[in-house]
Amino acid sequence: MPNQAYDVIIIGAGVVGSLIARALSRYRLRILLLDKASDVGEGTTKANTAIVHAGYDAKPGTLKARLNVAGNAMYDQVCAELDVDFDRCGTYVVAVRPEDWDTLDALRQRGAQNGVPGLSLIDADEMRRREPSITDSAVGALFAETGGIVDPFGLCFGAAESAVLNGVELALETVVTGLMREGRRVTGVRTNRGDFAARWVVIAAGLWADDLMQQAGLDGFTITPRKGEYFVLDRVAAETVRGVLFPCPTPVSKGILVTRTIHGNVMLGPNANDVASKDDVSVTADGLNEVLTGALALVPTLNTRQIIRTFAGLRAAGSTGDFVIECPRDVDGLCVLAGIESPGLTASPAIAAYVVELLREAGLALVERPDYQPMRRAIPRFSTLSRQEQAELIARDARYGNVVCRCETVTEGEIVAACHAPIPARTYDAVKRRTRCGTGRCQGAFDLPLVVQIMARELGVSPLEITKKGGESRFLLRETKQVAE
Ligand SMILES: Cc1cc2nc3c(=O)[nH]c(=O)nc-3n(C[C@H](O)[C@H](O)[C@H](O)COP(=O)(O)OP(=O)(O)OC[C@H]3O[C@@H](n4cnc5c(N)ncnc54)[C@H](O)[C@@H]3O)c2cc1C
View 1 (cartoon, rainbow, N blue to C red):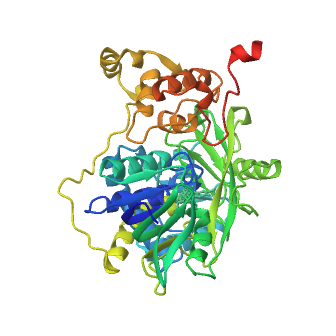
View 2 (cartoon, rainbow, N blue to C red; view 1 turned 120 degrees about the vertical axis):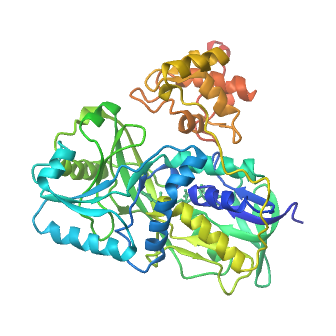
């Protein structure tokens, strides 16, 4: 027998599921947000280009186009409410051959059809003035003033924390293995932790949405994992690259970018190659070469000695080419989100609002809670504070005076705060994403043993139990004493 009865169960705590949970937490509902991973945002949400797209790319009339433009417009408010780093710095699509002007013009017209404000064409001199390291081949660019860069993890755990603070229950390391059904109605989910009954189940499971749809009898839609590989460069590289530089797009991807990140690094990528496995986030020599070649075509002076990390993410490329977001006609009690590939991060706040309206239309009673609190504060970021603010923080808690990560100036106080946040960081990667420790030039070589020690103390567990990202990803296998014996 099911052990709980919820109004809504959301499968998947990526940026989409987390923002849906938050949007629904405004109402008097009992909500459960589930994810199989050890932290929120461990899927595609943690490995993408982090661009808030203006919306000139998607085909006019599609859900992608509509929700991209609507989502972009919501970013200032949602990031202010959730205390998430966001910079509406504008983005460029760079033309390198005279015939690329036609592509830029087509993108501008498509943008106008999609209702994108602030698109303009600039010539080569202006492009070079704004971005001095741009290739000599640049003949001009399309500038999108509403484009921007964001902290995608921050948005995801900010939204999930806000949901939890407003009463949503979060269950991590909870794998949905099946859907419970009575006739044409979905009545809950089966998981590795038991069955949970619900009046509504929302599938926001990223790459795995098609597998879950099949369990509800919805065949015909498939997701292909499309890999994108990246390089991350040290922050000194930001002297070379100021903004967000796209090449002219290809039919399957927006092309290999060179972009500043919200935290001041430079990122190169992604390429786009279909792969067989939904878990294959390996990087390949060929893929990285492809990325480097593409990036150097835009900024030839990039210094490969400044590379500090590589990674890959998987796009959930859907068989229809558009986002699928619907309460299917033939199945009751179910809302499905599938094929949420790029610009899914940009669209995510609008997707959440759209899902709320779909559920309302399908009969879910939405009564506002008077105590709903939209504001959520992130833990202090010591390195970004003024000297006076730093001194005040240390006076309040001396642990903010103990720098644990030297590259990014992250203090013990921040790691302690992450361990005791509304969604406690229980893995090294969760601490890393919340504090930025281990993201600098040494990639954790100095801070890792210190962070493991602090986490064990704060979480009240043995250091042997601290993992990189849950499961068996332990750092330590046995105590030193045993090794010496
Ligand atoms: C290379 C690349 C570049 C991109 N660049 C951009 C960009 O610059 N701008 C932009 O707007 N978008 C971009 N995107 C798209 C964007 O990252 C995604 O659209 C977005 O992150 C999707 O979020 P999600 O919550 O739907 O999926 P996910 O983040 O994958 O979340 C799904 C969650 O469901 C969980 N789950 C799955 N199955 C189960 C189960 N059975 N039981 C329990 N939990 C389950 C997973 O663990 C996961 O956490 C990019 C994507 C990629 C791959």
